[in-house]
Length: 307
Image (tube, rainbow, N blue to C red; front, side):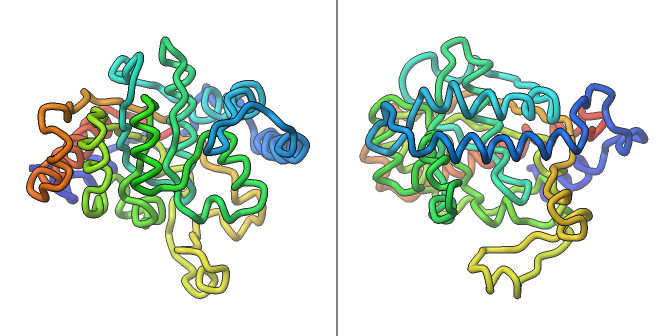
C-alpha cells in the first residue's frame, strides 16, 4: 500500500546534485520575463480577433499558431519536459486524463496540454476542466477559453467526452495546487469521484497521469490567508522568491519535468448505469488515485536531480 510517508521519502530522494541547475537550462531569468511580457502583448492584440470557435470558445487556430509557440520554449528549454506513455492517449475518440495537481498555479495543466499536442502522433488538443476562478481573471479568462479550457462541471465534461474529445481533470483542485512543499507528491483527496461518474456515463477510458517536476517550480512555504481573503482567493502562496523579489519572484524554478501517461482504465464494461452506483464509483476513484501515487513514487525514485 502506498502511503504519504513513502511519497515524502521518495520526493526527498534527489541525490547530492539536487541543487545544481541542469546544464540544458538555456533561458535566463531576464528572457523568461521577456517571454511573459510578449505573451501579454500578443494576447491583448489577438483575443478580440474573430476566429472559428466552438460553443465553449475554443479556437484551435489561435491555440496552434499563437499560444503554443509562445509556451513551447518554456516546455522544451525551461522545464525540459520528458513524456512517457504518450501512446496511451487514444488516437481517436474520447479519453479522460486524470493527473496530480501542484505548483501554486496550474502550469502543470498547460504543460500537459502541450505534451499531448506536440508528442502525440495525431497532435490532439486536450480540453481542460478549470475552476471558475480562471474565467474571472481579466485577459487570462478569455485566453483560457480560446485555448480550450472549460468550466469544470459534470454537464461540460460529459458533453466534451460524448463528442470524442480528450479531456483533462485535476481532482485534487486547490488542495493539490496550493499544498505546502513539505507535502509534495502526496496526493490529496480526490473528492467524491465526479470524474469517474462522467467517464462511466460516456464510456471514456480513465488515463492516470503522473507529473513530476511541478512541485518544485514554486515551493510553497507559507500561505498568507489574510491576503487571500482580501483578494477572494483560495490561498496566497509564499515561496522562497515570492513576494520578496516582486515580479521576478513569479519566474518558476527550472525543474526537470516528466509527464507519464499510464495505461488506460476502461469503463465500458460497467455500463452507464454504474455512474449511479457509489461502490463502483469509489472503487474506480481509489484505483485511479492509487495508480497515480504509485507512478509518482516510481518516477521520484528514478530521479537523480530535481533540476
